[in-house]
Structures are given as C-alpha cells and as structure tokens.
Image 1: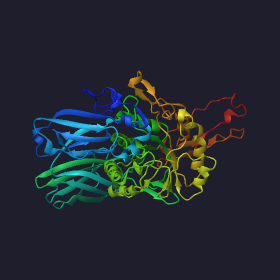
Image 2: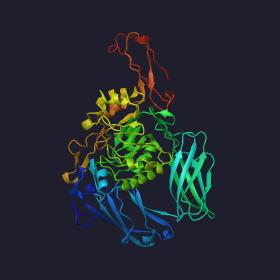
Image 3: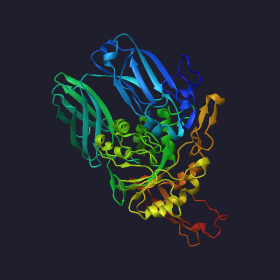
Image 4: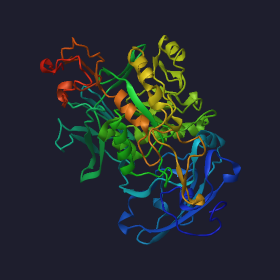
Length: 557
C-alpha cells in the first residue's frame, strides 16, 4: 500500500473489500483529490490442479477500484483494466504452472490514468473507495466452450437465444432445454448445428402457456444449453430467465406484458457502513424485501451497475430495474472507454428479466456516442434513457417543481417519470411531499411514476475516528432508511401511499350504508387473489351519528 494509513509495509487484507474499511488509505467523499492517488499491491499464492492443463483458465474480477493490472508468475495477464464497477477477465492458461504453486500479483490504482473514468466514477456525490471490492475467482472451461448467452424471451412464448462460442473447431450440435421453477421440462428442446470456427449461433423456439415474469409474479425459467460433439457433451451451462415483453409506446407509456406500468421506485447505492461498496447476497435480499414492504415495484441502480446478486434477487423477488453505467455528471466516459464499459455491462446483465431500461449515465454524465452500443449486445433492444434528460420519448428530468414544472412536463408529448424526485435529506422530503406528487402522477396519462432519492443513508464506519458513523455533513443522510436499514418516518408514509390496494375516500355520514369502494392499482393481480381482514368496531364515541345495529359492509372486487 502506497500513501495513506498503514502504507509502505506488507500486511493481510480481506478480499473482496474496500481498503479504507480495512485500515488502509484515505477516506474520500465526492471529489477525489490528487492526495488520494493511492496504489495497492496484492499478492496471493494458489494451486492449480494438473487436470486443468488442457482447459481454458480465466481469472475473473467482478469489480476493482479502479485501474487494475494483473500478473501471473511475473508475467502480464493483459492490458490494465479501467473502470471500477464492471466484470472483466483474462485468459491466463499460458501463464499457469499446472499441478504446482502460482503467484498472482494485482496492482490497483485508486485513481485512473484515464481522466474520463475519474470524472464518470469518482468526481461524484458519494463515497469513493479503492481496492478489489467484488469477488475474484478462476473458471476452468473446455477449449471448446460456450462463452456467453443473450436471451430474448417474450410474453407470448416466443424464444430466441444468441449463443457465443469460443474455440469452436468442428461441426458440433447445440441443444437447449427449457425447464420451469420445479425443474420440469417445458415444450420440446431446441437444436442447431454449428459450423467450424462459428462464433455465434441463434436458437429459436416457441412455447405455449408460459407464466410471464413481473414484479407481482416473478416467474422464472432455466435454459440448459449443451454443446455436443460425437463423443457427448463438451460443455453445458445454465441460465435463468423470464418470459416478458417491454414496450415503450410513444406519447402513451411504458408497457410490460401488455400492461401500462407506473414505477413506484427508489434509487439505491450498493453500500454497507462497515464494508463500503462490498456487499452480500443477504444484504441484497434485505434491501429488496424492504422495498417490497414499502410497496415499491422498481429500483434504479444509481450510479453504476450493482453486484450480480442484487439483480438475481430482483429477478426472484420481483422488482423492475433501471440498470445504469457510471457517469455522475458531465463530463462522461470518453467514447473509446465508454464502448468497453457498455459492452461489459450489457453482456453481464442482459438476461435479467428485471431490467427494463438501460441508463446511459446520470445528469449530464452521458456520452451520446454510446446510445447505439447497448443494442449491439441486447437482442431485446431495451430502450436507453439518460436520467435528467429527454430521450427516446421519455422525459426523466429530476426534482421538478410541483406548481409549474410537473404540469409543464405533463402537458408535453413525452412519457414523464423523474428518475430522481423528492430528495430526502434528514428524512425531510420523501413522505412529506409524496401524496401530492403521486396524486398528480396517477391522474396524468403521460406519467410512468418515478424514483425517490434515495433508499439508504450512506453513513460509513470511520476506522480513523473511533468507528463513528460519518455521513459527510449533510451530503449523505438522505435515505428512507438509515445506514443499517433503520426505518425512518417516511418509510411508513411511502408504504401507505404506494399501497396498490386503496380505499376510496368517503365521509362517514348518517347516510353511510357500509359500502366501501376499493381501488386496485396492481398491474397483474386481481383483488380476488387477495385476502382482506376486517375488524368492525362499535364506536359511539367516534361516530355517535351512526346506527351500529344497521351497519353492514361488503367488498366489491
């Protein structure tokens, strides 16, 4: 470790981690300064089985802040990777000693040599860290193998899958089997034959009576894909997916599976007080369940792609996702770097049914040259938005003034959904203004809802300040929940306002006949699928004008 706390000496560190939370380096909120230009060197010895000798062996990094140089046994694995939040890998087969000990050395620079990476990722309104903060692992594959998949599974059961191959030398058979959540095969298998040196093949099929994916019914399927030669299966992979269709209808709205949706959403940082950007699947489950408890149906990845396990949980528990590349504000990634970033993001995340839109940066931090890049890797052709701008018929401007700004947006021709609104500094915005905004949104046909800022306070444990929680003055305490997910007052207000089951407001007068009208704001759920628990309280004190002996009630579903 060079510069900062505990620098200039060898010691142990947990991986994955942000090194600031392990007692190294300097804490930085927002604008990363030259004084934080720290470098960490990691060394690790590991064994590789002799049986891997004829395989392709990759070392995979899920995320490292920021510039990352990798050597194996003193030899370079490839060019330095730039960009913190993106999966990258190197084929290190030629560098390994099979059946004996190998040494991995990773040099990580907290700041990038690419100024556009620093501007996009580190000159930002959030804590900036250093280190290998997401998992690192080896993958051993046959020389001929399936490299990646890109699935397009529509709500009507139409299915296509682009299968990308590596090392394909012969005429091989490709077989895909679809199974449901219980492991039962659905329909017939799909087969195709590859040509020598073919790098991509598309498999197509059609399935009847599929159960579609939505936040209310997150039905998932698994594609089992096998590459076969004359001797049998060469390589097999499994990919979870969902049948669903996303449409953006001009001057109308966003439709998923034919139903017009209203985003009841929130922005989320990948963050935990004692570990920074290093998070766990257990935390992802906790966060998604808290969002669902508030009756949310959507989450925005602000301002970078999340851990893979968070998207897995959104798929399985059910949330719409806006997946976002970094680019906090202007200037954005340069075009050369940005194209690599988009490819790494989309190829990793393309098969998640929860993702309905791609975000090309945030608040001016978007490069227009990248807009067409997303479709190169996404057979679903999901639309691209630019938060706090208008693109592809969608206006996502932030923090619109209620009295005139919102009406101006709704009087236009674009679908309107602010990807940030009602900033909740010290819990002063979310619950206080949501009812007014939401009533305006649900009454306007051009509205597609919106995303509150932000889910959780970014309070960090300062190892250099007696483990106190630091929210950097008034910059980071703007969550609906606290750093450790403590529920604040707005949590309960949001839960009530965003409940998809609402009772029509009615004054209780002597003429009240006990009939209450229920409003269903679900997209895919009939209220006859819900249970209602009713308690009738005879309260002559609160309602002295009512004849309780004649009181009755019923639900109209």
